[in-house]
Image (cartoon, rainbow, N blue to C red):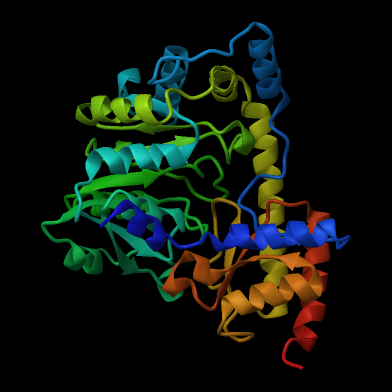
Length: 382
């Protein structure tokens, strides 16, 4: 497939279309309640900001090693040792300008044209687009509300063939907020292909415990970063942990495509890992209060939530009693009620009929949004 055809095959990121329209309405004077964006509403913790500012003032504004600052890679290694009791060499870590470039490095180094990558449906919308861009084929296994949006391992196994190079796992998950247990991750790892574990929402868990795939197998890649837990979306900083044999190929891609992540953002990330724990704990407590509030409120409005999410900051609610077309529902809600949400179809065919609500907004704004939704539903079919 030609590059132009690959680009043509990439599907729009609907949540960004929702956000773009919401911004346009705000520019026209409308007040919009944002429950669509997967971005913490908190400012970056002060110790992280101060470290970044001090770094800039010291003139730390030049290229770094293409793998990233050794001090940051050591801090990431220490973090995984402390939290998951796994040994990772700093030489297995590549620091990137967000997790999206990290995905491009992984798929660029791992996949040959025609290779398959297995992922759940619903899924994070960017996964299949990255796979298609490098010439791979995204294949899907369905997950269902009735099964707690958890994978059927036997069904996954049936879908694996000689061309299946990897399996993507996202726990805590976007859009469902579901956290996979150790046994489920172990079963996935036992299927054979490389596991690509997106761990960007680790730390945002309110019941139970999240597990890294590296506790189970070395036959895996980890995607992680600082956007979600540390409220650093605008800093554009992530990292990938990879088997050693892939580091040099991925490093060459990094050198050519991105050179390196910004120096001062990397310095700030060291402070995030080593000095921001107390501020992070406060944010997590607030997220949990919002989670409990919005789940209860949505249930009272009639949205279906059979499996309460315990991670990330999303509720993937069943809206089929209101509408079968989630895209139409979401944009009517935005235009008529001034509430921005993400239609489930953005996350794949199995997301149709659902709405993703993000609770990365204040309790006051969430409550305002709920009241508007309630009024909207009274007149939706009139």
